[in-house]
Image 1 (cartoon, one colour):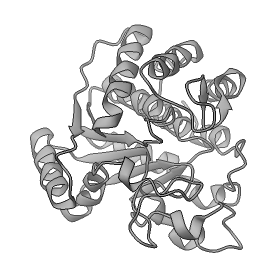
Image 2 (tube, rainbow, N blue to C red):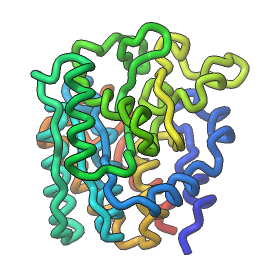
Image 3 (cartoon, helix red, strand yellow):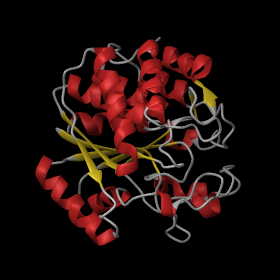
Image 4 (tube, rainbow, N blue to C red):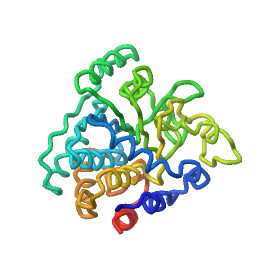
Length: 293
């Protein structure tokens, strides 16, 4: 039996010094609750994408791990992304299929540039829910509108609204049609982080820089915080599948290389084997190894 407490301990590491340490205790237990929620569902949409630009290296690998886990359980996984994320996501899926010998087919539903306002995005979101009978959604490392002014911000406070699409509306639309949502985040500016908005805005608790400006307005049913969002995706994939066969250090290294080759970047290091400013070797490799103990 894969233990949720041990997985949470492995991902609740603020190695990047983002100011997360005081927030981890607030979400303890959310990993197990998220897994239990997802295990009851059959058709799960997975939303990811954060345009630096271009698409960053955090998000797609964790999203792809979740799709593998859902496929292992015989559930349907559908990716949802803005157009800037498509090629990176497709490259990662191809590498995952090769590394893990996975033959499952995962559709990628793209919010193209012509979906250029919230109402068009809402209509597309509702159509996708009907098309796939979506009964749960997971967002991993997807920027969301701020509670302060509805704009989209990077952690450093830079306004990235013009770089992003409207796929985030999918996540917000699900509130109106009572579909449960799980969010995975690492900075307070991602979809779902309003689940702990009071704590984010309490300066005695939250030490994330610029949080008054960047904190996301959108909540969720369960929020998983991790030092890096990919780690949250890896941990949740292990917990819902209850098998370690879906995660491997060497395979994840290959997937990261594939998405970097497809154009993904690290915000600090550009086209390199880094995620959130941290080198895959040894840091991410060590976290994956800890999850697999």
